[in-house]
Length: 164
Image 1 (cartoon, rainbow, N blue to C red):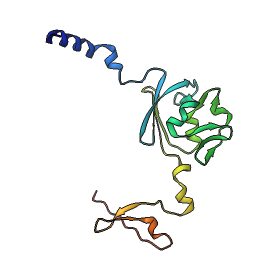
Image 2: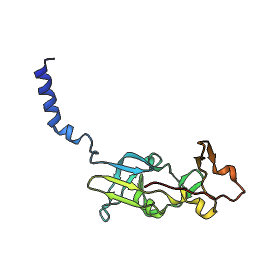
Image 3: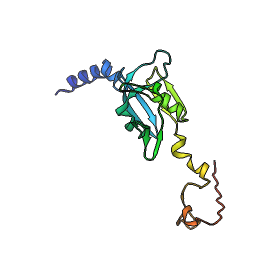
Image 4: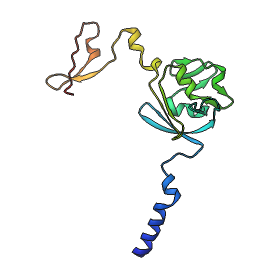
């Protein structure tokens, strides 16, 4: 291919509509941000009353946050959160309603088709009620790794410092 023909082809491709919309989700898709990852899902239905409500297909829920819809509710490992009838419509699942029910913070930009969900307290907040600190591994003064669980049963004073 000659240089001039190549530049003409690339110039046309760079200003065409496909290049401008390549990064944007399709009108029937949404981007869900959860747990340090972005997942593209197909929107199952829209809610006329609440534009920030995100209804996805039930089969997409495990890809988004690891939960699975079962008769007893939305389940992940040994945790099941009951689902009220208003959050299910056939194959559609109201992810935003579920997030609010489970205590997640939801930030939505329906115009950009992006929804961001905070952490689920039922999954990560167990140490607050159990009064058991999460297990961490940090280097000691000599650089050797020390695990907090190795001090189980003994009192520990953990000091942290940051320069910022």
